[in-house]
Amino acid sequence: SSGINAEWPLRPGEKKLKVILGGYQAKSIAITKQLEEINEQLDQVHVESVTYSRLRTMEQSIIPHRLHVLQEHVQRQRTRESQLQDRYKQLLEARRQYITDIQAHQMPGEN
Image (cartoon, rainbow, N blue to C red; front, side, top):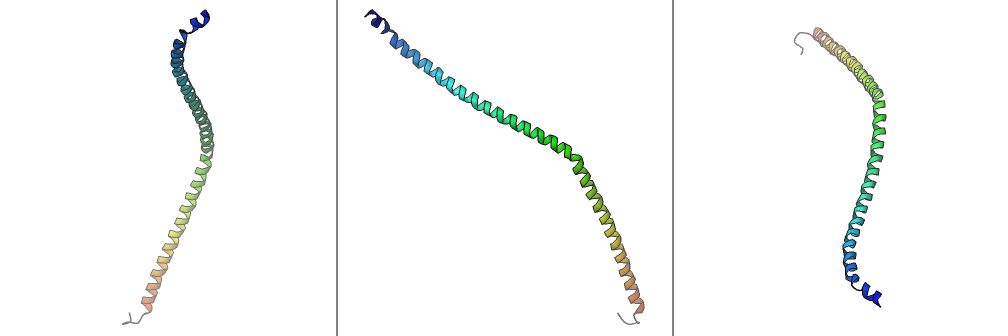
């Protein structure tokens, strides 16, 4: 009987303690959830970092080849442009010569 009376005054204190601890437990759960989310984000960032690092390495290794291909393309274009300019000059000269020949063979008074 004395054991029951000794417990009775502690119950309101225990209830108050449970309320206080319950708040801390809720905060602990919320913080734990945040930490898990942050860890997941860190894992994702790590995967992305490794992926982009590998991609960067691959891209850097291919740059000389791409540059060489582009330089060859530019040289082909320059050669082609030079050939076309030469052909254009030939055609202009031929046109000028045809006009001169036509004018030389026209009779006076013909236009």
